[in-house]
Length: 85
Ligand SMILES: [Zn+2]
Picture (spheres, rainbow, N blue to C red):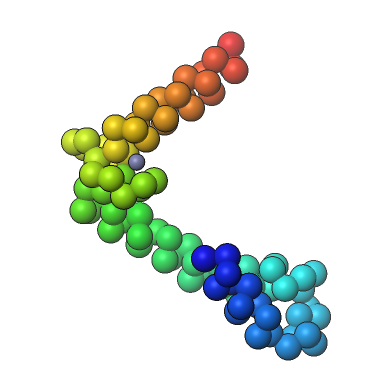
């Protein structure tokens, strides 16, 4: 993923980046709509197929995580709550 991104960025001529603070931002501005769409459709696909959105293991019924990531998620929630009090 990162390597692919870097290869794409190297192909951009230097003067083409002048309207952007740097190449990474330029890439982001030009592609973020497509990237978000791609990520979203992957997520939806995984939900439809019953695959954990974090790791591609089968999910337990009616949630988007496998048992491992459900436990992880519960850990995060617990932490978030305990910080508030
Ligand atoms: Zn998982």
